[in-house]
Image (cartoon, rainbow, N blue to C red; front, top):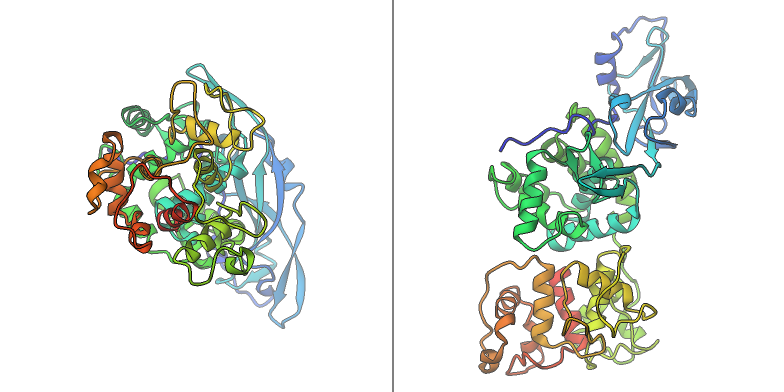
Amino acid sequence: MEQVKRFGAGVLASVLAVSMLQTMVFAVDTAPDKQKIAGFVQAGQEIGEVSFTLGQEESELTAQMPQTISVSAEDGSEQQLPVTWMTQADYANSDDFYYAFVPQWDADTYDVAPDAEVPYILAQRTDATVMEQDGVRSMNVEASGANATAIFKFFVNTMNYSSAAACGVLANIKAESNFNPHCYGDNGTSYGICQWHNSRFTALKNWCSQNGYDYTTLNGQLYYLKKELSANTNTYLYNGKTINNKMLTYTASADNAYNAGYYWCCYYEVPANKESVAKARGNVAKNTYWPEFGTGASSSTSVSSIFSDVSSSAWYKDSVQFVYDHKLMTGTKKNTFAPNSALTRAMIAQILYANAGSPSVSGTVPFKDVSSSAWYYNAVRWAYKTKLMSGMSSTKFAPNDNLTHEQLAVVLHNHAGKPSGGSMPNYSDAKNVSSWAKNAVKWANGKGLLGYVSLEGAKSYGPQKAALRSETAYNMYKYLG
């Protein structure tokens, strides 16, 4: 399958080096009567934002932008350069969620150094346009903040991308869909967070249907994206594995956030004018998402000084530090973590819900023992709707029942997309693993998620034994860390 280029909605402005602007717009003239400009005070940076709605006149946006910007003259002084603003995108005929506008100046009066990098202004779309396709009505703008967090965590925790590479993906998905899994574009021919187009839209629906996912959900689309990136195949994406391997090379840095955003745009999204569009997305990755997500949030306080029952020498200390720093688990009380207490079914739902960024959830669940006022209500609804967990019966979720070791393996296996592989643990009671849990336990063992058994010095797996909070913290550390 040839990778489809998204010409209608994938075009947005670039942050261009002055040399490119001169090549495209102005003739380079170094006549001595021109005023020489060495560079821009805020080179390569976003210097402002304006908002717009779909269909708004471009002139209304540029009228809000400054008429001068700060530059450095050749003698080192700071001056104001009169400018107008333009975008390389087909603004009037595209439906992206941001555009970068770059400055233009009178080339007959000002001679700007050819290697100078220009600042830009970001135009952010804020309308909530109702769209309808195949009987489904949706909003183009929704809880993008929670979805952005969930997407970032998916690429870091499930795809093993660095925070910089994940920021590059975010910049592209922001432009394509504003993180909305229900977004239609190109007159209804492209869909979802990545705006899968025509045959790739069909492939998304077919794969999700065949593998137990809902193609209209963020979770389904992320796991389909993972499938696209797993191999070079015309069935899904001819260069998917090549793209993935390249993205895995970007280590955590602001410059690599730019590089990842640029590369993903050129080789995964492939909009028209891809090189110029890629520069804009690279800069959004570096200047917007890297400061928000890239440096990571970690606690500077050791959990051993917070929780009296987590000693600095405990085998689970680093695991508890990880889940505490990433706000996946807190203490059962202010000063206790309760590492040897059992984890409940509601707790594991809450942990994975928090890891997903606590997205908004609609609808109800069929469980009579899950009250809408319970602290775990949204987490259980999310876990049920994303098919990470089912009930103990059609009407009973059993939120306060202890989660067993084999149930924990199944939940994580579901979260990973039910991959195959692995082998049963080498313990005598492994034969007692329930038939419905065997594939999950094999996978978990292959991923080293059962290491807590040997760390504790135990000689059995205990498939029906309650998973302890320390053991669960270890699983989260190994699986997500």
